[in-house]
Image (cartoon, rainbow, N blue to C red):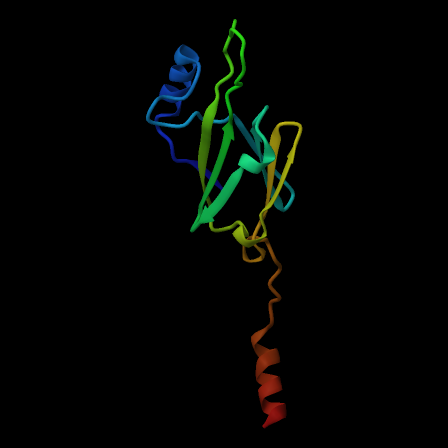
Length: 144
C-alpha cells in the first residue's frame, strides 16, 4: 500500500544530523509511522513546534504530499544551543490504488499529524455467490 519514493532519505538524515537542519536545496524530512487498522491505513508524522496553519496536505493522482514549517525563534537574546531544525519540512508518499483518496481525514494534536486513509470499497474482500448452470437454464425456460 505504501511505497517510499525518496532513495536519498538516509543521505538527508545524515545531513540533518551533521548540519542540524535540511540540506540547502531540500527541505528537512519529517519522521513518520504507518500501519493498518482494519479497513483504514493510518500515517502519523512527528511535527513538534509546528503551527497548524503552516500544514499543507495535497493529493495529486496517488501521491500524498505533506508540508509544514517551523519558524525560527526571533528575539534579542544569544542562542546557546540550536539542535531542533527550523524551516520547511516535506514528505511525499505514493499511495496504492486500493486506498480511497477522496476520504482522507487529517487531525493535528500535540505535535503529531495523523492521517486516516480508508481502504477503497472495490479493494475490500467480498463474497461471490455461485449459481449452478441448471438453475439459469430452468429460469430461462420458465420465462419463455
